[in-house]
Length: 203
Image 1 (cartoon, rainbow, N blue to C red):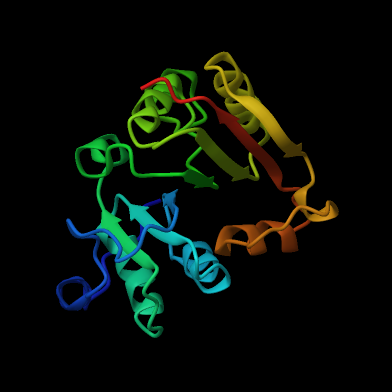
Image 2 (image 1 turned 180 degrees about the vertical axis):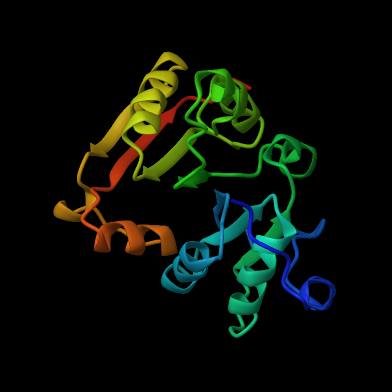
């Protein structure tokens, strides 16, 4: 269910001063992107934890981005920008700029007829090819078993090689920054699935 528009949405969106612009970042540090940043917990804490990496949080829905903006603007973080945009349109602005893409708890679109909407479908993987600047690197987390199985197959068929994977992330030594959904699901005893993959970019 899509969240309702906050009453102050227009004011919050208009006052945001960390939208991505044509200047990107004032350095040559690697750029990592989260597609579907939700309420912003993950991308904010990653930017705080890794100041020598630039981060971009992407969110399709302005009502959701509004919540993230309120959270992020409490900090002065030079290595974090956001975009409110459909992922399919990202190459127009970020062609060949990205080092890593994070896909955290993406909508599973459980019905077979909707599989092309999944962010790990081949159609989206082709879009990501245009974003990466060298090697393609995707890190995915989900609570959904079916989406994880679909993603593993789709990504492997597209030529990615697995670096790390887990069906129970929180019982591994993998370094992990949690999302808001992840904390919720984990507290309910749901095991978090994790996939870290890469491939050569032939674009």
